[in-house]
Image 1 (cartoon, rainbow, N blue to C red):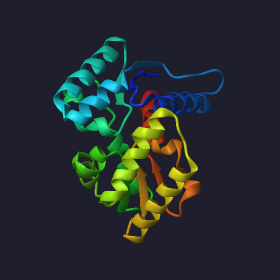
Image 2 (cartoon, rainbow, N blue to C red):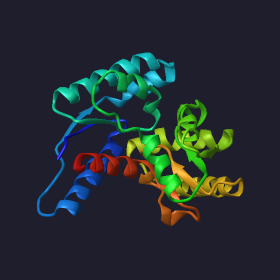
Image 3 (tube, rainbow, N blue to C red):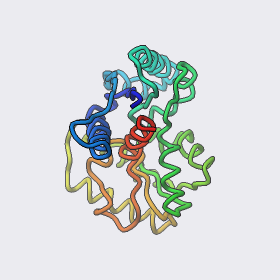
Length: 229
């Protein structure tokens, strides 16, 4: 079995999900007490969030590239960035190591296409919804995106940073997200991408009427597939 390298802590609430999904899936497939060889470097999210606000993507690229190199030195055969937003610097991180970086948008796009969808709503941080790097990656795989409006984007971003990253889960916020998903569906979305790794902590396929693409689980399962193949 190959070793997985995970850059976590963005936030640690969703990093827990990565660890659980990866190890439970390895155990399910291999049986017994099997679990995944996994190296993790968990960053201080306060520093990342501060740099995001400042627009210091170059500094964050250097930080995550250093983390990736540390994981490779620890024996990782692949690297995952355990957050959607920070895939803005994925090209720099990939260039810094000689093992594959499993891109979260690629595995998500593959799942969308496999499900027969071509147009999806995209929910995530403001950076993910507004800056183009994520939408363009999905577009390159033949997937079109419907983006929430300005007020909706502000509310999703607030829920992520003020609540989910702090382990706060409110029924009122779940209800607000469900309304946004319904609006995206009315605007032509055939499914919805939970394009922030914290969103699956509060929203699931049981909550909405269209297919849900949980990027956290899809990314973690892709790591398992890599490790076992």
